[in-house]
Amino acid sequence: METLAKSVTRFFLQKHYIEPAQAEWFQYGLARRMIGSLTFLLLLPVGAMLVGWIGSFLYLYTFRFLRTRTGGYHAKTPHGCLLTSLGTMIAALILAKNLHSPFLIGAVLFAATLCIFALAPANNASLHLTANEIAAIRPRVRLRLAGTALMGGLLLYICAPLASCMAVSLLAVAVMLVLANSGLGAQ
Image (cartoon, rainbow, N blue to C red; front, side, top):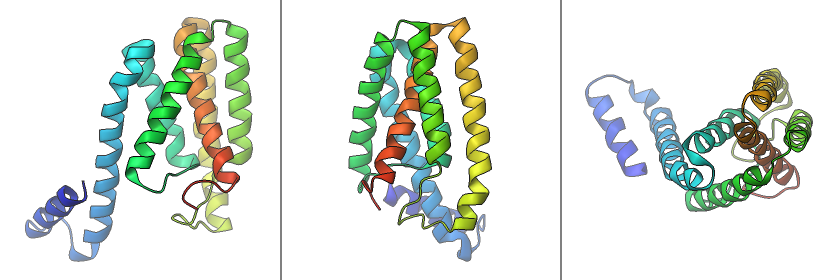
C-alpha cells in the first residue's frame, strides 16, 4: 500500500495537483484510506457468511463511522489491525446472530452507547491529542453516537436481526475503547 501511495503522490506532484508541501500528508492520508478500504472489502464477505451481506455491511459501516472519531485500541502493525478486526467482527457477528430477543438487543445497544459516551474519544501516542483537542472532538463524537444509537433503536422495531448487527458494532467500539483506556494497543 505504501508503494502505491508513493507512486500516486509522485504522479499528483508531477501533474501539479498537489503542492510539494502537501505531499507527505497526501501520501499518509491516501495510504490510510487504501488500507481502510481494503480491510473493509476483505471483511465484508467474511461477515456476509455469518449474517448476510446487509448485516455485514451495516456492522462494518457502523463500526468505521464511530471508530474514526472515537479511537480505541490500535494494533501495532497493519497485519495486527486486520487480524484484530477480523477476530472482533467474527465474535461480534456470532453474538449478533444469537441475540434473538429485542430486549437483549436493546440492552446491548444501550450499554454500549453509555460506554462509548463515557470513554470517547480515546487518545494514544500516535494521535497525542491535547485536552483542548479532545474537548473539541467530544461533541462530534457524541453527535455521531446519538445518531447511531437512534438509528439502532429505530431499526430494532423494523428488523431486529439488523439491529443486532448494529448493536454489536457499538459493543465492539466500546470494547476497543475499554482496551485503549486500559493501556493496551499502540500507545
